[in-house]
Image (cartoon, rainbow over all chains, first blue to last red):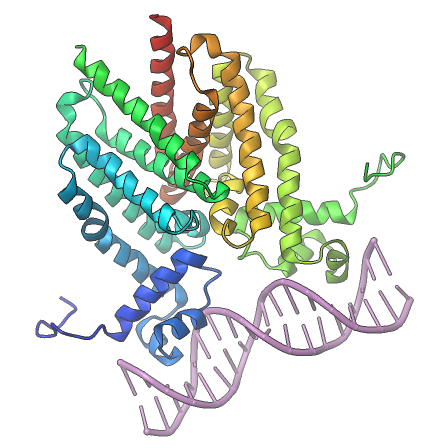
Length: 207
Length: 207
DNA sequence: GTCTATAACTCGATAGAC
DNA sequence: GTCTATCGAGTTATAGAC
């Protein structure tokens, strides 16, 4: 709707490059620690262009958060769902995706939204809302998996509550992995979550 | 050992005031977002004095992390342990303490170590170690509670693993509470953790 | 839409008197 | 151990030509 329809082979317009560069730098270094000049250098764009598209650095961050919302399904969920079909295993496969992110960065980079949630939640209401929206999307995807497996869970089970718990465990597990620069706390936390889910499934089975 | 023994009524020396001021500002605003000038103003101290005690801003942060390590038992654990005697309930009472912190700050401030873990873990190895040390202390306190209740838990149960899981849940729950500016995700996550622990206790009972 | 140049300010840190 | 003054680099953002 904002895009002219015939523009199909556009070679990555400047705005796109700015958002993608900012996305990666905010993730790797944090928002405050990333200078506008860093984004400009890395994107090969001049100051004037950035401020043509975005009034402020914060507005650039809001665009980054919108981008994350768009990427949730194509980048995070769909590849996993294509590979794994059992709804419960999909949940743990998504967690495995974040584990891989930790592996590839030697436990230096975790969930970009989680970082921003702690750094920025009280600094801007608009940013906080963008973060909350991303969390809601993630939880809904997980809640969808759990709903599919509803008949294997105890009667009257609250799938949204467990979905929120899964996000909680993932974020807390990533935090500890980064603080200890080790996958062990991540693996231990996911194993505890698995134990909990197994007990829920076993409980539903015996009834 | 660093303190002269006769100095008992010292009116809070400058160094102490700097560490305490920095501790509160880093907690409320984050490390990068807090300027050295903010610390100086709030502490009523001049630049020259700060750099007499600390070579850099990062060294001030390390002192803050040491202070948190010292405060863990007197400020976080002991008051709860004095009030609650059942070891399992102690765990949940400690979580209740963090809930109160969220209540008092309208879900704006959570765990100061968690904030720093995500903001600073990859920026300085010394800082990361100070954070990890705080996490280890917290987990050990929780593992101590669980060990006391060992006979009520399933045979061969790994108390350290559950302690790590409890920290994971607490940090993830605080993150979501701050992002949504609501206690609901915190309460839901703690309720799920309680459900898990109840199932562990019930499992041990039937054997 | 993009360019260069720079305004206006804040940052962490230092020097040297007291 | 504390003071004032300030350095030099970095910050976000803007102005105005092209």
